Length: 340
Image (cartoon, rainbow, N blue to C red; front, top):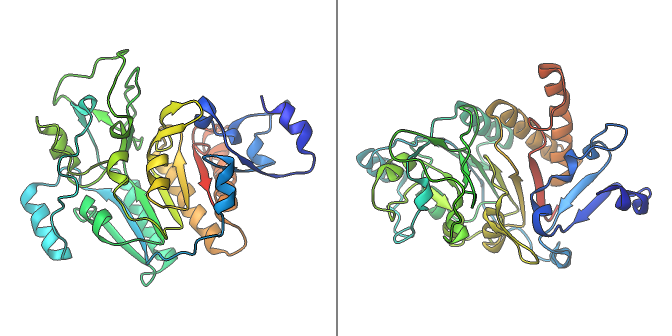
């Protein structure tokens, strides 16, 4: 697929690409040439929603405040403890999500804690500095924090992500940053065509999400931040959103229209660029890759896309040493979309 393009590229090493259809779901970086090398070893890829996105690069200045880092949410947070936490943070209990339904297919699922995400956001907080970043973990990793803390310069979310396919819901391993089925309810039927709004079928989990999942009322969606909810955020002035979770780049693909999911929601909410994943990512390797990504950005020698590429290349070597081969499952899921 890439070979015909490669012949025309010549010495070019940075590629801006606006895929269509299911090519939106493919990280070109993990494709291998006849020599066995991955494309990431030779090229830096910048993904676009469409070619006209290039015209907007550099036209708007960042107005975002401090970076906002959210990780390791307490998914089992109770109502009373949440109310106490909101008072301590001087936040109002959110009403913006009122009437926002969760997908029927989330019934019976349960989110487990991810200790690697706490280490990840703490390390990034140290790198950025307390004067430039706010950190919220455990019971403070609330949906209200996301909605009421203003427009951050960088928004980093390290948690479970979910994408509900129209055909199937596969069980994930315990060390993945994805969703996990529990015995709370009946499993969703597989191989059934869905007709729900695609923007409620992708999202991520914050504190209290398991309480919402256990409720019978589908309008109980506190802690389940869907793409539909993201559309209500104020992110004009946000330079970068990092979705350090599973399958955050997926969604319903429509030829000629792109992907209906988190990626579209965040860009429409105003974010200039987005780091997102194309499959279920392992907790340990994701933590390591993200810390390296921020170190590269802060070095001042690379733009955001280049920083992600170098982090993936470093992680490739770590994986090769650790597992005996450089399998892209561990390092290749994350791609960069938007303005570098």
